[in-house]
Image 1: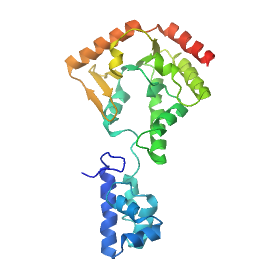
Image 2: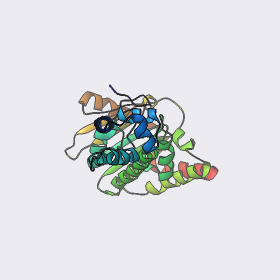
Image 3: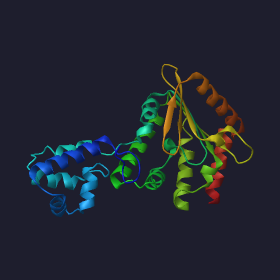
Image 4: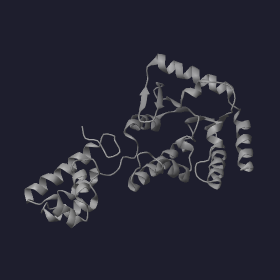
Length: 271
C-alpha cells in the first residue's frame, strides 16, 4: 500500500499518473535527476510524485510530456488529479444529504457546515492536519458553500442543535466570529430552518459526539456519524432508533428557537 507523506493512503489517481511519468521517463532514458533539473524539482520530490506519495504537479506533467514526446498523453492526467471536493469517507453522506427531505443534526464544538460562513469554513479546512494544498482547500471550501444551496429548498426541513461551546469558541478573530453568529441569525429566519442552542450544564447523549439524521424522499431513515478520520452512514433500524432517542433527549435540553436566537444575538453583542 502506498501512503502519502502525511501518512494516509494516497489516491489511486496519484499512483497511476506517477507511474505513467516513471514509465515514460524510463522509456526515454531520462534519469530522475535530469527530469528534476528540467522541471525545477529536487530528486526526492520527483521520486515522491512517481511513487504516488505526492500528487504529481501540473508543471511536472507539462515538462515530462514535452521532454518525453508524450504528445499530450501525460498532460491528460491533470483531469484526474483535481482534488476531491469532499473527504472520501463522507461522499455517500453528501449524496444522500442532497436528496433528504428532513435533516436533524447535532454539533457540539463547531458550527454545522450548512451554516458556516465562507471565512469560517476557510479557517477550519485550512487548518487541516496533515496540511492540505491550496487547490484542495479552495475546492473543499467552494463545495461547502455550494452545499448551502440545499437550504433554499423550502419544502425540505433542516433542524440544527448546536452546543453552546461551538457558539462561544471563536474560529478566527473576534470580528469573524461575530459575523458567523449574525449569519446564524439570518439563516434561522428561514421558515424551513430551525436552529436551537444546547446550553452548558448537565449531561446528555450529545457528549458522545455529533451526528446527522436524514429522511429520504422514500421515507428511509439514515444516520451519519463522523470521527477524526472516518465517517459512517447507516440505515440499520436498531441503530437509527438509538440516535433518534438520543436526539430527542438532547432536544429536551435545548432552548426554543426564539430563545436560541436571543441567546446568539446577546452573545454577538457581548463580543
